[in-house]
Image 1: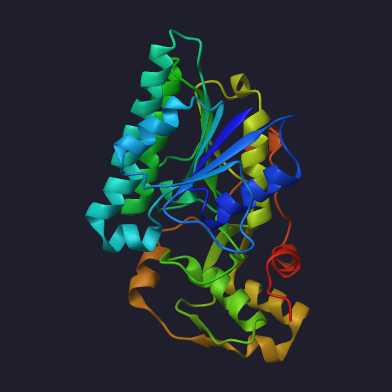
Image 2: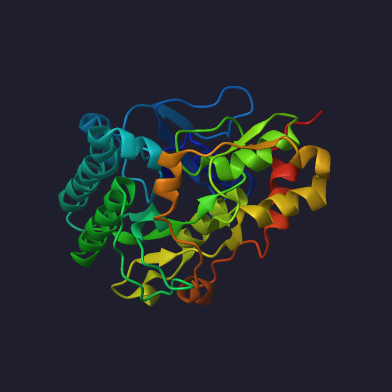
Length: 323
């Protein structure tokens, strides 16, 4: 099977590629990664690593011409950057996604039905906006309150409509905030959720820009790769016309995150977390979901961690730099 990962140089793309290299979905899988850049030493292996930008229609048409069987679309401008750079967010997160769908539709139509890829799109819980119930169920309205969430919601609808018309198979998975992310902080407004765990564990100071009463929905990078793998083999007929699913995760407050870190690593590590309120981040975070009841995803076999201690230990086992 030919597999294409758009955004394959990013953290989730690398986790997925490494998982596929270790445990292929099928015999003879050939994985191609596409992204603006790739990690150097230690990066995930793949048959091909193609540099390029998702906003380049010619590059996307060339990828589509290779007619991969399975396409993961993971590339996006993250939440904080999409909010601060309005034009770039819309260009990358919506316009480029529409161009991507059109490029693959052209290949499907040229094949006269012989080619029909499965497309798996990483959406986000940012498609939901307040007021929230105690737990967001599978029937809750998608009404985002950020540019990033709006761009993701529109892309979900586009993909669903192209699937409805018979051009593709596939689905959208709404990822929780992925935590603990390895490496350096990115421009996502949510990056502090990882930073307050990752940096103290690595002997560095971490800034906490929100009150510790903030509650949020998390899953590990390992779980993110697991969601994507499972979506590749799921019988999508079971989804009917509702092709976007809320993924499982762990709901906890920042205080509960910190207490889990204390229980695992001790007071000295926790002391490296420094509160420093940031009005912009607090405003963005205030419009995010806090807890979910993702029953449909669980019924279809998607799984994640059961507590935040597991999420911390996953980072320590898989991604924390070794002394």
